[in-house]
Image (cartoon, rainbow, N blue to C red):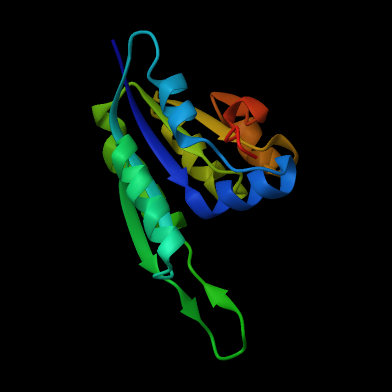
Length: 160
């Protein structure tokens, strides 16, 4: 049995799937895909921004129901109109801390900032798979991954 840990950059997946594929990611289908065969999901984290909006709360509860531990950061609106809400460091820390407990780490993100993390984990003998919308995933992250899996229409909610 292969032990797997999942790490989802929720904002990145939401926007890249919407922009690149014109739909919404189906987390249930993804969970079923990853857990098929002899795979056991031992840890699953979804990192999101907390805007305290009803639809987001419902979505976060759906993620929890699937089996994800949802980690939230407050949405910060700056005085210049820009916004802040970044989970890169949190995802990095959790992946480094979890790596010794699993056989495979799965990152859902297209953010090139994770290429150094992936390189480091692979150098330590870990398998790190990356799922992302290919046209919107940084080339450096694709190259760093043990295997890159493009998110395609099979992982979209069917009602979209």
